[in-house]
Image (cartoon, rainbow, N blue to C red):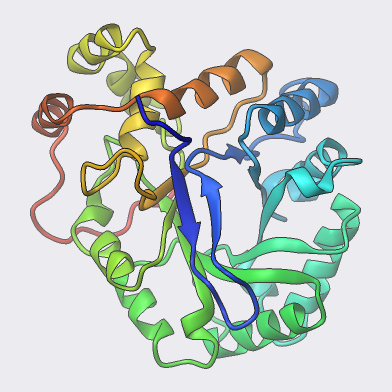
Length: 299
């Protein structure tokens, strides 16, 4: 058992000091689409804040801004409890269009500032133009940090040659036990740059792969050992420390979606699970990482 909540650390930038966040946050993909009652989604996010899952991840893409509205309602009256991440479409990421997109997101969430603003995936607009807009947003106080999402290692290397590239705070990518391609190149590059990874769909998005992971005999035997669920083991694996020290900052923050109090509570409890070397060896054998670079997995 760790003696404190596992954390990831966002690096210091030219305007912000380093910031520690719990290694599990809350995703909002598919919220705001009437798949669950609005009040239930809001309640789940607020309950997550109560349990220490302070990072809320959303995007203008999710429900065409509807998820941002859910986030705004969830943090109303308790803005200081939340670290809010949103993302801009690549075609809205121009010198001026990114400013307008951010302002629309702020209006939907009824906020003055977004804590972390990401380019949702690489597009045709030059990256230096996008980062120029991000710097302007930061300088005017509309965002605090900026970063990228769905960037492969070649995209990441390009950051080093543009203005503002060294202030990139994170790369949000697909990562779970059944999709480990980033361990070959993206993760080592980011570790060398002292940048954390944000892992979306840490339980896999659904379908056969998710079912395979959750029904795995290895995963379930380890879950029984830790008096946990299979999903909690997958989350504990995603945020595992690379150096074996459970009290050290983690290289990955996982952002599972949970639209009910029960799921949020289960996600928060995964912070208390420490997988031992035997557990990790068994999971590696059952679901090995590729030995060579593969195309970046995206959903």
